[in-house]
Structures are given as structure tokens and as C-alpha cells.
Image 1 (cartoon, rainbow over the protein chains, first blue to last red):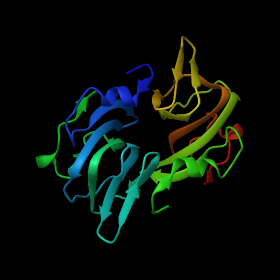
Image 2: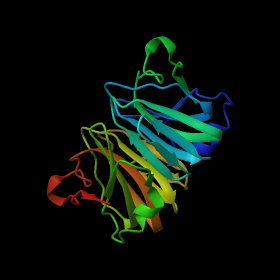
Image 3: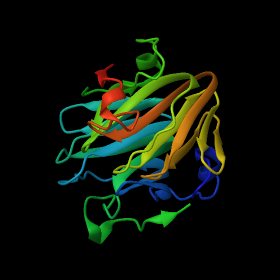
Length: 117
Length: 117
């Protein structure tokens, strides 16, 4: 991972939804791309904020009191401890950043494995 | 900073080069946008990696042994301790992530102030 990382190309290497792929490491974090379609589960991360940048499509991040709507080029950081549910009515591509080892569901028992792209 | 953050709109709020603007905070990091044009100085950060994602234009990140060329949608993480020099032959817009308080020059004495966008 020592040269330019092309996010679009990385996104062509897999098709699975809600299965983030690590494209780089930044300090103690994984920088990941993911494809989303449908509703994810409500979850929260008690120890880390959750970084979302939309690369393609329109993502809704439902919070308990409102919904954040993100188009390509828009980002949002869900603060730690805040329950949220990503919803993608059509296929959405995102850049995600999370500390390495963070379960994407907020619960190690149900988390997707972390996979290199 | 509690709603969707539109990176392009944030980039319209200032014109200065090499003057990053903080658009969000993620854990203990500032998420910033910046406009670059020309050659920055050679520098390194001993304690943090340096995250660059190009949003517009073409950026060259010169390392001592090679150059990383980044087009829009491409990213690179300069590992901590590695000397680098960003070079933008034309105007380039980037997303940057650095721990809050990191001097952009690697040296607090010559660093740009951190400004909210």
C-alpha cells in the first residue's frame, strides 16, 4: 500500500455490500471503502467516532432524532456513543475511517471481518 | 458541524493556498480541506501519518526516493517520519486528516494556524 490508492479501482475489486475493504492505514485507523445497499442495523461505537464520506450515490444516516442525507462529496462524522443506521436506497460507495479492530456493527460478535482490498 | 458537510462548498469559503480549514473533527483528528498551488516545503511529522485525498486537480507528493502522483479520487498516506513535499502545478483541492494540533509544516514555528471552515 505504498503508492497512490485509487478509490474507484479499489471499489471494482469486490461486490459485497456492508463488507468494508481496507485500502490504507492511517495512524491506528483503517481507511476503508465499502458498498452499501439497503438498511444496515442500528448500532453505536462507544469508543470511536465514525467517519463517512460518500463517493457515489446517496446515503442516509439515520440518527434517533433526525436523518443526515449525504450526496457524493459530502461527509459526516457520527460522534461516539450516538446510535445510527446507514440506509442506502440504491447502491452507495463510501470512504470509511475507523480505528483498526472496530467492529462495523458496534459488536464484535456480528461484525464483518476486516479485509484488505 | 452537526449536519452534512459538503466539501466543495467548504472549499468555496476561502482562497488561500496551504491554509487548511477544519470541517469536522474525528476522534482526536481534524478533518480539513485545503487548496494547494505551487511547492510546499520539505517536511515530516515524527508522530503522525499524513492523510491526503485529492478532490480536484493533480497533486504530486515528492518523497526523497520517488514521487506519488495523485488524481481526483486518489489518496495516499505518508507514513510518520517520512520527508515529503506536496507540489501542485495547478490548483489542487484536498481532504487532509491530521491529529488536532499537528503543525502542517512539521514545525510549530512555521505552521499555518488551524481555522474552522
